[in-house]
Structures are given as C-alpha cells and as structure tokens.
Length: 139
Image (cartoon, rainbow, N blue to C red):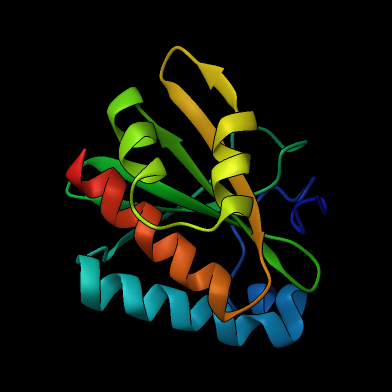
C-alpha cells in the first residue's frame, strides 16, 4: 500500500492539498463522498491524525459513530473500516468480490474489530466501499 500523502504535516489538509495529492483520483474521492452522503447519510466528516507518522485521514461518521476512514495517498486513496464480528459475517454474505472477502479474512483483528483496508482504484472499488458501508451501518 502507498503511504499517506500527509505524513509529517502538522495541520489538516485543505481541499486544495487533497486535490494536489490525489491528482486524477480526486474525481473518485469526490464521487464516493457524494454518494455516501446521499445514499447513507454520511455527512459528518472530520480530519483526524493519530500521529505525524501516520498522516491524516478523513473520518466519516453517522451521528457519533465512526463508519469509515479515507486516507489520501499520492495518486490514490485508501479506505479503512473497523468491522465487528457480526459485520464481518454480514460482509461475507453481501456479494462482495472474492478479492475483498480475502482482504477481510486476512485482515488484522483488534479488540475493537477487524481492520479492513484497501486502495480505491476505480468504480468496482467504490461499489465495494458502499456495500461495506451499508454492512457497517446495519451492524
């Protein structure tokens, strides 16, 4: 996976910073944010950085609940979910590709859930993000 584009940056990135880092992938970023806001009511967005070594990610929330994270990289971006056991089982049954199912099966498990991360490359990845978002919201 590519490193976060905003490692070692003390301040949250602006939209101009994100556009410069993502390049052509900014269109996918904007499409995903718009579709998640419209279809899943994910309108609460917060930039977050746990450390300067990790960089910055955009956290999408439903009310006060964290649903997913978007991490800008150079030329692409990464999506991350923390799925509980019920959500992992539901994800296996919701028609995701075998590639995404394998990512879930191989993901590291933490006390708070299974950390599923992957890079968004195109429309098929947007569809997977939307399915996993629906699973997370329902579980």
